[in-house]
Length: 231
Length: 385
Image 1 (cartoon, chains in turn yellow, red):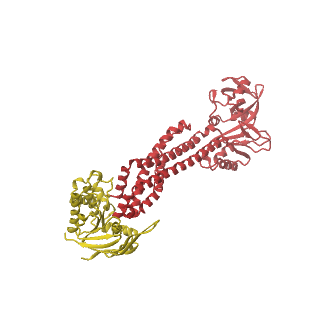
Image 2 (tube, rainbow over the protein chains, first blue to last red):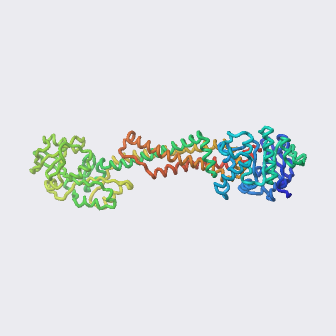
């Protein structure tokens, strides 16, 4: 396994009116291709900041991020957007579906800016992905007509529809009951094991973290330990 | 699925905001279209009614004497000391560069005569042209058809005690009164109008003309230009423009035109402010949504495209509806308020103009909100920070 994601000496300071707040002190982290990593820590520990830095949305104050040997924050703005489109799929903390688009339209969002496939192929692909996650019959429903678990699945379908190698998830089970949460985590496990996607998930839920291969513990902006799990 | 799908879906979802945005633009465009249509109709109306205003150029021989007044128009002396104009001079008027703008040329010969023992002023005219020129004339009787037919002014008829069909001897020659003018309130009331040729014969001035009244209209060039050209072909004559009537109409039109432009600009400015504030508030409400787009990998240009496409769709619809509403309003208002007799039609050029203007304002008003949206920090928008 090669080092696919390298977080190198990353620091993040947020500057506010009352001075700087150090969200990340110094983070060194590597994630192999096809690995499923959970980042655990209490609220305010800096785990979401770390995820946003890995997600190419939040440049670090110091240090660098390498993905597939690309120095991500050395890229220009538009190339950074292209990188996110090509490499990353996001599943956000709150169910970030666009409320006025149906389930299948939400799934289609990453494909709307792809020029290499026809409109018909895009719709077919989105339908296939929805069927794969068990929502083929609810494709035309609006998010408000779906349960929390179903919305989470739609968000996952959207994250994987353009076949990115990396999935980033921020508290994916945060708003779900334990049974649904478990189902979602199993889905992540399948995406990791069967499709070899690299998954980095931020959670404070230990049960959810158990589905990962490795758990990184973070507190006060520092990695305080890690745990390898047998799944 | 394309970006336009996202724009259209958002417009459908935010019906209230979309309607507000469309109304802001629609009212602006409709106002502009109404004012433009009415202004245009007023111009056409003036053009159409021009011959009703009578002559707007008077040509008299050059003279050093004091002026006489005729028909409310100040003219040079028509005394015999001055070399009079000729019929050839009248014909030359139709040879000027702007000859297409000459509507009517009405030559006249004036002379004092003896009408059955009373001194009177006889005016020799070409009746067909004279009657065309003086649309406001109302008379009893019929149009002159013979060379010895006369039209009497109301005052002249009273003083000479003549009625329609009665004979009148002028300088010993016999004429017949075929019509009597209703009172005009001008000097015409005291005049006797006869055929030009007969008058020339009677006064012993064959081919002579005292003055020429011309009705000319030039939409695109000033009347002064026609005066200048006429002076060139008639160097021995004094050519003056009678501007009051047309000018006051044109002045009113110019004022209305300027008022329309100012009002249109104000309304359009308000329209663009409505677009700006509505789009800004829409962008603010959609911060997280835009954050999602950016996280998914949408470029700044994609975000701008989504916002501007929304503005484009609303502007297009508002432009079309604004044109329809504006033209309908103008059609309704023109005859009632402005008293215009010209019909306001559906103008394809105005459709293009209205839609183009709506799009321009819609896009200009949305440019900053779109730029703001495209520059949203995705991490901040998604509350990672």
